[in-house]
Length: 386
Image 1: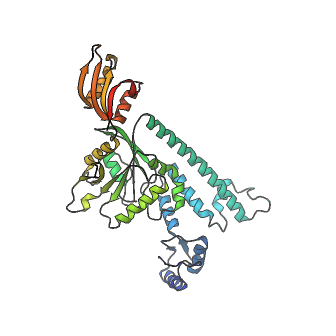
Image 2: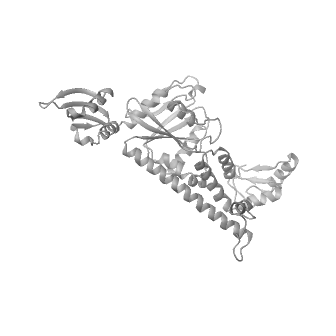
Image 3: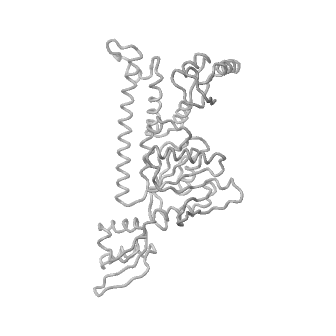
């Protein structure tokens, strides 16, 4: 319930509070949800008046996240956000932490119960942050490994319930949990995908965004969101059938800015084409001819080839066009260039060395050559970058 001028005590005016109090009693309501951020004191004041539990937008999102978390990492991230949120609202005994610690000898000299609970909360926060930092380090190590192997990383981002997981499953032929509900995905899922015109990429499905995403959640899910901010390309999945899609697009860009991903290359993917009339799967291009957006239906499998084509074009924008010198001992490497369809012409010098005129994405050239334990510069006769 929005209000243009929030009051310090209740957020809403006293008249509205009385009206809601009567409604709560008449309908025997046991939970009131405000689609707004409440201060801890406002929550307590409203609970005293309504005589039931009151939560704000942040509390609701945290509750939904808690229900959706399935992996150990996801549960840790949700717990971190919940504890950060709870730390400003701790006004009475927090007995579940006592049970975790055994309940004996917890209180220091002169400590009140509230002080003990706050100390236990700080300890738990440190434990969770340490574990998540380890997860973050492991993810960073994996990303460095992919970079060394010259495997591009592509992440799906977008407003919650835009169809990211359905698209992920359709493109990679996976079975990641997908449902018509908010925040069905909390944990990043990575799959290797082979593109005909490019080679292997790693595709990541990540947590969905939402309007006024609480900052505590962004911080708690930093390890997950960094999968997007370290990608070579972002696929911004948009619900083409959603009337509020422009506002959702704007909100996604706000979150991308917050996690430092605002300058990454972005391909807009307008999903749920099957719910529209008169729109066919297609690639729309910018003034330079580069793919800008793709229209498709993940559920019906329409336009998936166009999406793969657009990804390959954008990631292969830095093409290698030139001649490679391949001595006879690299016959296997020579055959791989032919298998890729990258060879435009072949000559031989007086020593029998193969001179291959090739055209292929630089990332693919690096991948093939690195398998031989070599660097591209050791084979290049002449080249042009496009």
